[in-house]
Amino acid sequence: MIREDTILPAGCSPECGGCADGWCTEESSISRKQSRAARALTRWEDRLGALLSVSGEKRFGYRGRTALSARWTPGEGWRFGMEGVRAQGAIKMRFLRPRPFVSLLGCPVHSPGVRRMLNLLAASLPPDEPEGSFPLAFVSISGAQCTLIFKVKEDPGDEWFFSSRGGMPPLSETMPAAGAEGIWIHLHPAAGVRLFAKGGWRLAWGKPRSADCRGLLYGPASFSQLIPELHGHSLNTAGEYLRPCPGDAVLDLYCGTGASMALWAAAGAAVMGIEAGGEAVDCARLNVPEAEVLRGTCADRLPQAEKFLLSVPRRRRMVYANPPRVGLEPPVREALAERLCPARLAYLSCSPGTLARDLAVLEKGGFTVERLIPYDFFPRTAAVEVLALLEGPEG
Image (cartoon, rainbow, N blue to C red):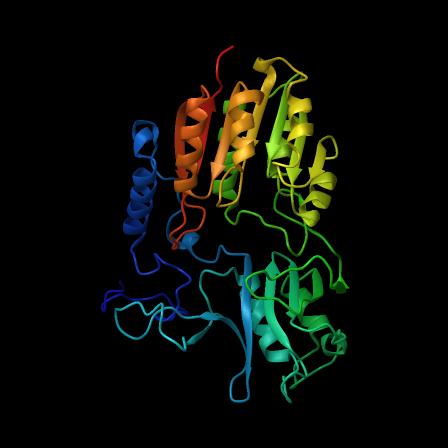
C-alpha cells in the first residue's frame, strides 16, 4: 500500500505499478527483499548472506532495456507506457476496469538513452489517423537496439524514419544521437503477452547487433542484466567457486548471449552452452567462439550435455545455470542429481521460490548447499535474485 505522505521521484505516477517497491525507502526495500529470500529459503537460512544492492542515484536510470505499449490519442499524440494498477490514494486497484494508461516517457528508472529514444519517437512518429494507418502496438528497446512492433501483416515501410515531421529533424538523424544503433520493424499480428514472433523482422536502419559494456554482442530481443556492477559480482563469485581450468568441462545451462561462458572459456576450460533463443545463440557463438553452443531447451539437449560432461572425471565437471523464473526443467534437475553429478554447481536464480524447490531435489541427490547470495538486480521492484553455490555428490 502506498502511504499518502510518500514523495515519489520526478517522473513517477502514483498509478504506475512498474516498481512494486517504488514507494519504499532504500533501506526498507532492501530489508523487504532480504525477507522475501529468507522466507523462501528458510531451510538454508544459515547459509543465506546479506542482499547485495546499489545505493542512491544508482537505483535510478539503470533500466536500459524496456518494452512498452504504444497509444495514440488525438489530443496527446503518441505515449509509451503501461496499464496502471493503482487508483488515486493509497489503495491498489489491480482489478479495476478500465485501468488507466500510464505514460512512462519520463520514467526515472529508465536510462537516459531510453528516455531520449522514447521522447524522440513520441515527437516524430506519424499519427495513427485515420486509425490503423500507423498501427504501432509496442516499442521495445534493448540497449542501442530499438524495435517497433506492429500488430499487422502488412509492412508500414520506413518513409516515416527518414522524413521530418512537426518541425523535428528526421528520426534517421536524431535517434543515432540518442544512442540508437539499430532500428527494427517487427510485424506480429498476435503481439500481446508474447511480443516477439520468429518471423516478421526487418532491419530498417543501422546494424543488427550492438556491443555491451563488456564488448559482448547482443540483438534487439536479447536479455541482459541491467546493472553490470552487480551482475559482474555474481559472475566473478561463481567463477571463484567453480574454479575452472584447462582439462575441466563447464556446462552452461540457459547461457544467453554468453557472458558467463566467456569467463569459463578464458580460464581454459572446455565449454558447452545451451540456449533456446535463436538470437541469443547467434550472439553467443560470436561472443565465445571457443564454446560449443546448442540451440534448444536444456531438457531436449540433455543427451549432448551428458556426453559432454561425462567425457571427463567427476572432479572435472562444472555446471553453471541461469534459468528463467520457472527454474530448472524437471528432466534437467533429475539429470543433475542422478547422472551428471558435477563436482560444483553455481545456480543464479531469479525466483527464490523455484530455487528452493530445485535445491531440495538436488540435496536429495547428494548435493550440499554451501552459500546463498541474494542480489538486487532490479532496484525499486519486488524482484530478488539469488546465487546458489553447491558442492556435488561424492563418488
